[in-house]
Length: 267
Image (cartoon, rainbow, N blue to C red; front, side, top):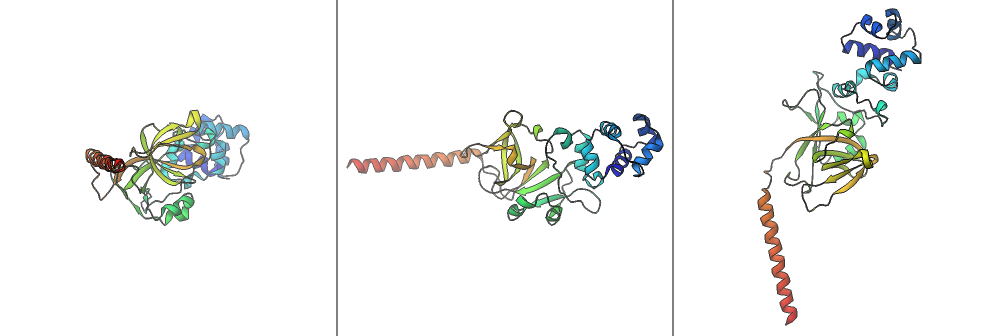
C-alpha cells in the first residue's frame, strides 16, 4: 500500500503544509501526521475525504506509487484523468528519463516494432530503446517517435519518423487529426482518425492515400494512442499534383492497351 507516502507526496507537490491539509479535511494535524508516517491507518471516511481533496481515486492513492510516475502522467492525474475514476482500464506508461530527470523521447524503429507490440508496457524493454531530445517540444508532455512504413500515408514518405504525444484520455481524440495507434493485432498504425468511441466504442481509421479504404478499430483492440506532432524524413514528399499526373498517365496507358486488345479481337 502506498497511501501514506502518496498523500505526503501530493501534499508537498501542491506546496501545502500539514496544517493546510488538516484544516481543509477538518481533522487534527497530528491525525494527518499519523497517516503520512504510517502510524495510523485511515478509515473509509478519511479515504473518501483524501480522494476528494486530491481529486484522485482511492484505488490510485492506495495501489499506485505516485512518486514513481513520470511527470507527464502526474500532470494527467492532476487534470482529472484518473482512469480508476473514469471507470476505464489503468494505462500506466513505461518511460525513460535522463540524468537531469527530464523525460526522453524513445525511438521505435521498423525493426523494433514487433518487440514493441508485446513489450510496450515493460519498463525493461522500453529502457533499451534509443532515446533523444527535441528542445522545441514541451517538457510537460510525453513524446515517442515511431518509424512508419508503406505508402498509405503519402505524401509522408515510407520510412519517415513520426513523433506523437501520449494520449491518456481517448475520448479527447479529435476527428481528422492524425494519430499513431498501437493495436493488439496490427501493431503500430499511423492514420487519420474519426472518433466514434462514445457512440460506438470504436475509431474509424483513414489513410491520406485515397487508394486505401478506411476501416474500423474497436477500442478493445487498442493499447496506446499518440497524437501526431511532426515527422522527420530524408526524402522530400511528392507533390500531390505530380502524383495525380502520374495516375492520369497510367490510366491513359491502360485505356490505350484495352483499345488495342479490342481492335485485335475484332480482327
